[in-house]
Image 1 (tube, helix red, strand yellow):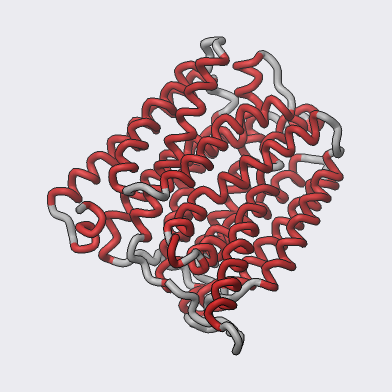
Image 2 (cartoon, helix red, strand yellow):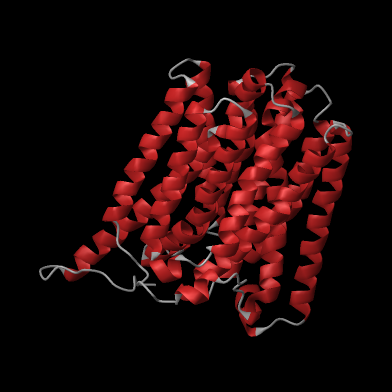
Length: 418
């Protein structure tokens, strides 16, 4: 789909437009990934903060809840703000919130600073989820339109993987101290802001009125409602597991390896997030209907295996199931998103993507919120049993929805299932 408006050269208008579109796609993808790279620094740093700030398990869980709270607030009230203001200004705001969060981490000295920083990172990632992802899809190469969907699904996980890996290596080998690490994150986001200013806008100012976009609204076209149920169940179920890893990778490392530090926490999370990113990119090229069925079944096996083997004192078996779980999560989310956006219009994209991720953030935050409330009274074995029910429910709901759609498909569903 072409960009709605561009400044074209008189000499080579088509060639210049293609170059501008390619540059803007690169910038949009780079900004999306960078928002999540900097957000990911907090994941392995949790091991450092637990040691130096004396954080308890409820406080660790609350940091995750703060992050998801920022995401949810943004997606409720500003999900379609880029349809009024334009993609670029909202992307720049996302980058600015991320930079402020990293600055707070560099000077923070207690759990309250951590909560505020993670909340701001949630605002940043929430805005990036709506505006930046829409910008990525808008500017995707016309001959490789699947790349836009694949990047929106895999981009956050690519960023999380890079941020986690770099943080673990930088802190473990004393390349930078924590304060300078977060200062470097601020510099990265400022660079992104400069690049975003140079990119091509794809949504005219005032395409929708401020009244239309600021009032909370779940923008789901009627023809896509059952497909939305399918997609959001896939996101909530898989994200519930991956969000638990965000806060508790340091504790997983302690249980499985017998010790925990920033690097081991990073490795534990990377075993999940790298397969998510790779699988998300590769899955974009395949039939989303078939891929979703296969991947959600693999998720049932892989995620179940993670919690079954957590206390078996066998790192190799545990790591194998974590990798399988990661592959399944990436494939499931990419397929679910592609299935939903197949014939979505330019104006529908921001609302659909935001509604999907809003539901995913709220739903997947439920496990961490529950742990935050009851962590002092429950063991990891009980938590693992709870996730067993969570994983099973996800698989059952998706399979039943597939059966219902196949029996009486609408026109929009026939395009995907035939």
